[in-house]
Image (cartoon, rainbow, N blue to C red; front, side, top):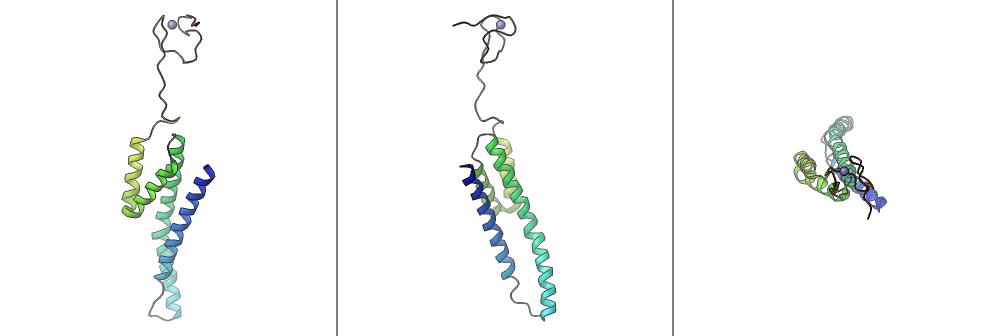
Length: 145
Ligand SMILES: [Zn+2]
C-alpha cells in the first residue's frame, strides 16, 4: 500500500514536470531572429523558465513530501493531503500552498494518531497512573481483580 502511494506521488511529479517542460518548449517556437540569437534567447528563456518553473516546483515537491510524511506520521491519509496541496498550488499558486500548509498545521492531530489517552486514576489516592499498572506507583496499592 505504501509503495502504491509513493508511485502515485512520483507519477504526479513526473506529469507536472512534463507539463512544465512542454510549456517551456512550445514557447520557444517562433523567434524572428537568426540561429545565433535564437540560441542565445532560447538559453536565456530556458534559464528564466528554470528559475520561474523549477524553483517553485522544487518547493512544491518538498512541501508535498513534508505534508505526506507529517500526515502519515499522525495517522492521516498522506496522499489525500498531497492531492489537496497540488490542487491548491495549481489553482492558487503559492497562496494555495501556504493556505493548505497553514490549515494542516492548525488541524493536524498530535503524533501517534488520534487515540486519546484514557484517564486512569488510583482508587486509593486518586492520582493519575499508567493504564497497565498493577500497583499504584504512589501509594503502592495493588489492583487485583
Ligand atoms: Zn495510589
